[in-house]
Length: 208
Image (cartoon, rainbow, N blue to C red; front, side, top):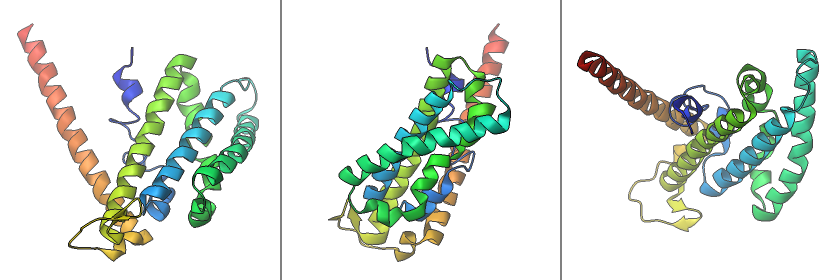
């Protein structure tokens, strides 16, 4: 059964909105839905496969050696993922540029493997990993849709009737501002949820 700790990657400890990790692709490349979809696919495939494969690396090896092996594994996974991305999202890789290969050395693979995932049982690790990935995917898609809608007046390159366009949202500084607003809203909502849970817990204790 999925517990709150495993769900944290989406709700309580979103890697983008809470941990401020993997924010560069979101800010720089998340200006259209098509870019967002390509990044979601690549991030999901590279991160999930790389972390699962890396979990079989012997734990007795020195930390530096293990990190190098994790990087090699993710680099090897990146190659077929890039080829498939070219087929389904032609032209997007060129638009994303250097931020696409950087997904192969994202924080979940390089840092969170030893600090978080590999401290769990394999099934718990996979569940937690999936929700962490979903946390990134959700932020990426929301950012892509909103920025494309209000920057270009389109969704997935289809024209939408929008009265006011904010061209700055298509630029990196616009992405940075929008992500900052999302972080603020996310933390505000998370704070309200935490307070409600605390009130309920205190009420339950009082009833007993």
